[in-house]
Length: 171
Ligand code: SF4
Image (cartoon, rainbow, N blue to C red; front, side):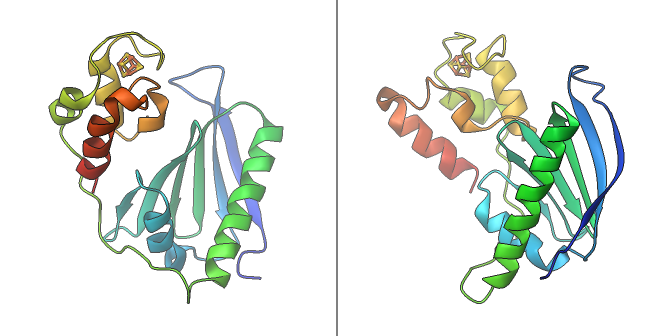
């Protein structure tokens, strides 16, 4: 097996959301080889080939991988952390075992400007995404802290054209 273990180095309260936690962990293998495959797999991933690191979101959880480090943000408990580490270990091992059949992406996706994103959102300020305004949501989209699926309105059939443009804007 490529990745046997992931050790928890630290777990602390998240400064931005004090009812959530952050953790730093160390994998038993250098993960660099799988990062371009994760980049291809997660459409909103932020991959940096120069620093050989990637940031992506799984549900509400932010993952950052670099070398043998896996950092997680916004989980709710140690039990959830253990489940997330099992999930990411299985994912990495599945990718590593299937690398011959998968297509990696070695380039960084472009991140559209906030105003471009805002212009394609519904602009209803309905707060269904839990943000105060569509502009605030666009800003968090730009920072890769939210995903298009977090806006239920733009995922309605009426906005299918806007959603397609937003997805294309992220390359
Ligand atoms: S759910 Fe969508 S439409 Fe509503 S405020 Fe958030 S971004 Fe705007």
